[in-house]
Length: 130
Image 1 (tube, one colour):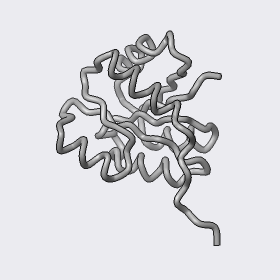
Image 2 (tube, rainbow, N blue to C red):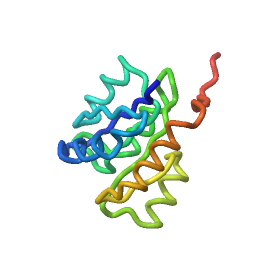
Image 3 (cartoon, helix red, strand yellow):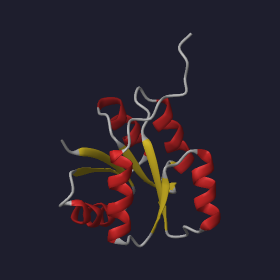
Image 4 (cartoon, rainbow, N blue to C red):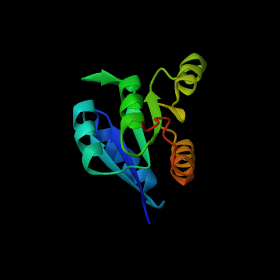
């Protein structure tokens, strides 16, 4: 069974490049261009991982993190950004992201991080039913 990854980015070329990187792995990448489109897609489909650009046309990566945690199935979030430095990495992890990927993408790192994130057991939601 293939794991599903939702990629949120305005950059269609990045989506094509990532798809090529992942073609030999049991991972399926689906692409949307905005937070709003991601919200719609997440209401219809479960994903193992969300890969999101740090800055989106209608939000930011923290919004994606909240969206991933508030859904019926908590989902790992990986953030990507050209300015990925140690400070940003620490912030992302402290707020609950699985990892941070620098751009431009380095294929071995992308494959390792996405495969490992998809191989983890599903997250337990922190919400408690009343």
